[in-house]
Image (cartoon, rainbow, N blue to C red; front, top):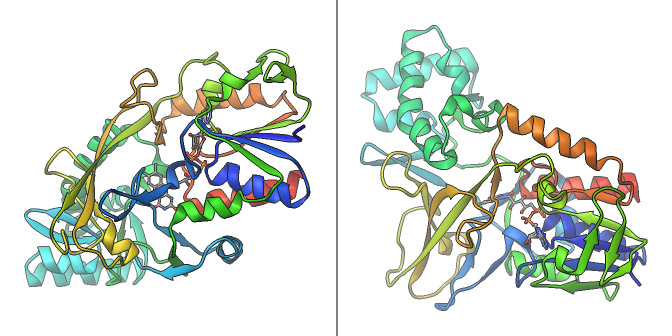
Length: 383
Ligand SMILES: Cc1cc2nc3c(=O)[nH]c(=O)nc-3n(C[C@H](O)[C@H](O)[C@H](O)COP(=O)(O)OP(=O)(O)OC[C@H]3O[C@@H](n4cnc5c(N)ncnc54)[C@H](O)[C@@H]3O)c2cc1C
């Protein structure tokens, strides 16, 4: 009946479903949640505020092909994301930039630091925090240590539950010092939010009559996968088509090489009867409180509505047996975990009827645009 079964209705699964359906393939998309959209799902809360259920999602890309592809499924509203970080009682721009230096340090010191950063790295450069810390110059070393202590170390510890040196370079490299006065969080060419929300994009991606969607369905409750032979069964009958799997790779293979570690999050939503809760969409709290950041949704969606809803993010250990902690938001990158993932990946290669794609199946962090680009590329290469 179906040519393909896709597990997961996030961007990885939904983009592939849309592409394959456009070639007249018949598809079944299965997701264990009660909605489509994966972690990008948004909805109106009881107060009428459009919220992002699984944490704030801001679309930004330099990839015109991805922006244009998604533009077939949504109208965009221009939006530039701004983040502040609460440091020593003040809100300063994040990522840390020349304006933050000016705000936090006495004038002469600020001028010295700015001049040195400009001459060594050049205006506009993003310098990874760990690179700056290794610098010989005493002033830059002071600045690096300040940023490391006040912005990075406690945030990282809260976010990952690890010491900074235990985190792989690809994560720390994402925390730059920006030699610039541009207070925007992203500098990409295309920055926008879907005018009618992310969920609408997914409804449009999945609307072909060739696509059947089954929600609230744990994949293994309707399918059997023999992890030795690769044989698949759907509702008890052999399934001869292909499986596209976007869930956790370790779960697919019954944890045969052990569990891959993930970080989870708890989201506490609060509604306030005020026009505006905070000055920008997101304020980071590197040192104070147990949450890492507060996001106010009205800034993102420009809704004209009384009251406002914010979300506080509390990082927590992932535990697949605990309903409050069982969503794997971020793979934890360490050398040992990378090795374990490689074992799974190599094992998976023998099954030609299974394609693993997505942040959980590939055990890596993808921004939305990278995820869409990856799915489009895979489709072009493979099908
Ligand atoms: C907190 C947070 C904030 C983010 N913010 C941004 C941002 O601002 N900008 C940006 O570009 N990107 C952001 N991202 C990244 C973005 O969420 C990902 O790029 C995107 O979700 C990846 O899509 P995916 O399809 O791989 O995964 P997902 O969206 O997680 O979809 C996977 C789906 O598979 C389903 N599934 C898994 N296992 C099973 C199973 N066994 N049976 C049935 N269904 C199953 C899940 O229920 C889920 O719906 C953020 C991510 C997080 C965690």
